[in-house]
Length: 258
Ligand code: NDP
Ligand code: 8X3
Image 1 (cartoon, helix red, strand yellow):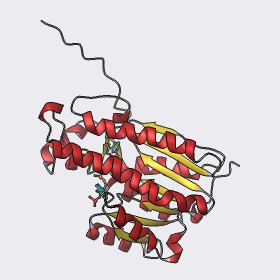
Image 2 (spheres, helix red, strand yellow; image 1 turned 180 degrees about the vertical axis):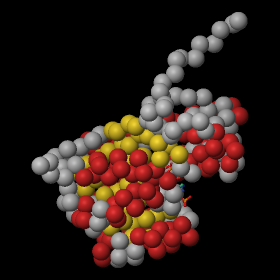
Image 3 (tube, rainbow, N blue to C red; image 1 turned 90 degrees about the horizontal axis):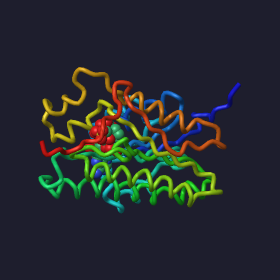
Image 4 (cartoon, rainbow, N blue to C red; image 1 turned 60 degrees about the horizontal axis):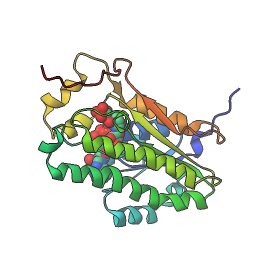
């Protein structure tokens, strides 16, 4: 019988737990007997999640990952059952807009960089030393197929996800021998609030990527995240790329004079 890790020992710090993958992962870990620290900016969503999962299993903290001091304060104030974090799910992130680069609002680019790059490194840096001091653990970052494959309008978003991938791989080199595993999860088309955020609340536009097809859902990704963290301690999934079975690769785009 293949021996997986015991999820009842998991204490999982999750960024972006108010929606999508983060919320689904919180539910998955608690369903397996683990404890989660659910964070995000929307307090009402966090409170609803805690009410659903139970305060013994789910500790909540409102947090903007762009704010290093807030991250440190939340970590310093964790109550005892939640202090021994052994999994970090650095999931919070966003895409804004899909315009060609020359027409993009520079503020959107700045928000993506501040969240998907700075917020990611702040999260990992704030939690990494504790993981090492406690004897090890697992860091899961959220990349994307957009970090590998370019598409029109994906310029800065895709670049932030390429950063997440390379950051995770480099991090893995730095924690060699420290019993810390690092995994970059790289999903493709998955229906969450991602598109609603990208199109700034325009429900018509946000629904289009999912129309007439079957995208993945948040539970698909949460299950994959959960699986990588339950594998025996001697196994490290470096990168895990997932696409909906309905999604595949297109040809190169050749511009022709006529
Ligand atoms: P959602 O929009 O459903 O969830 C995003 C989460 O990130 C929310 O909980 C949001 O919480 C949080 N978040 C955003 N900005 C901040 C911030 N500044 N501080 C704290 N939390 C923040 O999207 P998904 O669940 O789909 O996305 C999760 C991750 O997966 C992202 O990194 C995304 O780029 C990536 N991804 C998504 C794919 C998809 O197709 N859905 C595919 C590949 C990768 P709040 O607003 O309450 O702060
Ligand atoms: C989200 C998937 O293809 O919209 O990272 O960029 S995609």
